[in-house]
Amino acid sequence: MIFTCSNCQTSHSFNINFDVVEYICTGCGSEYEFKNGEQKFLRKGKDSSSNKFIETLKVGNKGILKGVQYTVIAFVLKKVYAQVQWAEYTLMSTSGEIVYLSECEGHWIFLKEVKTDLKVKDRPKQIKYKDIDFYLFEYSNAGIELAKGVFDYAIPNGKIRVTEYINPPFIMSFEMHSTFNSEFFGEHISAQEVRNGFKCSLPYKSGVGAVQPFYVNVKNTWIILCVTALLILGTHFAVYKNQGDQSIMNEFIPFSKASNEFISKSFELKGGSAPLGVKVFSNVDNSWANVQLALVNERTSEERYASKDIEYYYGYADGERWTEGSTSRDFNICGVPEGKYHLVISVQKAPDDLSNHNVQVRATWNQASSRNLYMIFIFMTVFGAIVYYGEVIFERYRWSESNYSPYNE
Image (cartoon, rainbow, N blue to C red; front, side, top):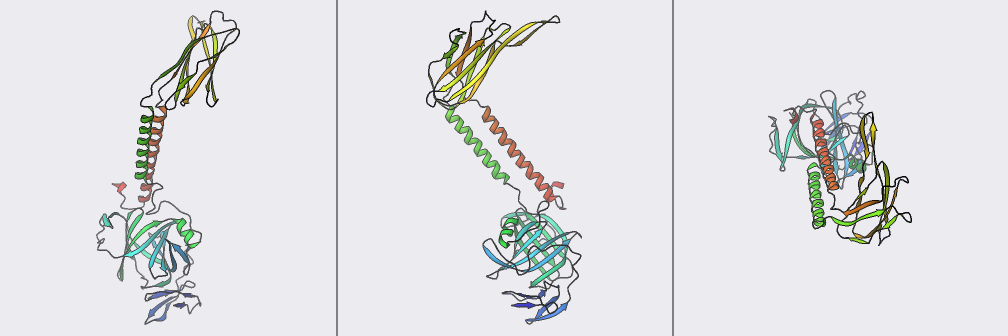
C-alpha cells in the first residue's frame, strides 16, 4: 500500500495487513485519516522545530532483530514531566507481526502487545505475569509530542495514563486513554543489537535504564565463587592430606680456607609443591657471616638461589646497651615441587673474625602454606562483596527517579 502526502508529495510504501486509521507524513507532518479505504486530509503538521529530538530510526528503515526482519512503520515521541521524553518505534515483520522498540536516553526496550486480566487502575505495588513478579515503577500522564507513519488507531490529543511495572530486564507497561487500553510486555535489548540490526548510529547512554540489567548476575557470580572455593579447598586437601614436614639436612659447614663450597647429599621430594624452609645459624660476635644457597633440580638442572647475611652487633652508647641483628636467619624457597634435588652452599665470614668457625644450615621441606589459599578466599570474598554492593548502588540509581522506590521505605 502506498501512502502519499498531498502537501509535500512524500511517499511511503508498506505491505501491511491491518486497517490504517491515520497516516502522518514523515516529511511535513501533515495528518490524514482513512475511511472506507480512502485517504482524507485532516490538518497540517505541528511545528516541531523547537524539539531537538533526533530520530534514531526512520520510517521505512529495515533491520533484523532477534533473527526477524522488521520495517519501521511508525514513530511516536512521548513526553512526561515537561522534560522526560522517549521514542517509540513501531516495527512490522515480513509476516505481519507488530512489535515495538522504546528508546529513552540511549536505553532500549523490545516490546510486544499482550492481553492480560491484570488490574492496575488502583496501582498495586506488585503484579505477576508469566510467573515473574513485577514492581510498580512509574505512574504518570504522557503526551504525544510528535508522530509519523501509519497507525491502526487515531492519535490521541489528550494525556495517556502510563503505568509501568519492572523486574529487570523485564517490564510490563499499561497505557490507558478514553479511546483505548493497551498492555505491553517488554525486555531490555542491547544497543549493540539494535545498532547491528539496523546498521545505524545510536544516541549515547545516560544514567541507568528502567530495565537495564546489572553488568553481571550477582547470584550466579556468588554461586561460581562458592563452587570455585570448594574445588580449591578439596584439591588442596586431596594433594596435601598425607604430606608433612620432611627434614632435608642439618649440617655444620666450616669456613674452610681451601674451599667454602658445600654440596649436600641428593634428596627426593614427593607430594605437592611446598616451601623449602631454611634456617642458618653462626656464632657471629660483633661481626657478620654470609650464606649463599642454590637448590639444584637434578632432573632439569634448574637452579634457584638465595643469599642471606647473618649480622650481630652490640655495644654501649650514652650509658645504654644496644644490639642490632641476630645470630640466625630464617627464609623460604617458595613453591618447590616434587623431584630429586641437592643443595650447593657457600659460606663466608668477616676476615678479622677469628672466633667463629662454622655455619649451621638446617633445611626442611615444610607443609604447604595455607597463606595463598587464604589470600584467594579473601580476594574472592572481597570481589563478591564489591559485585553485591555495586548492584545495590546500581539499583538505587535506577529507582532514584521513581516515586515508588523500595529504597525510600
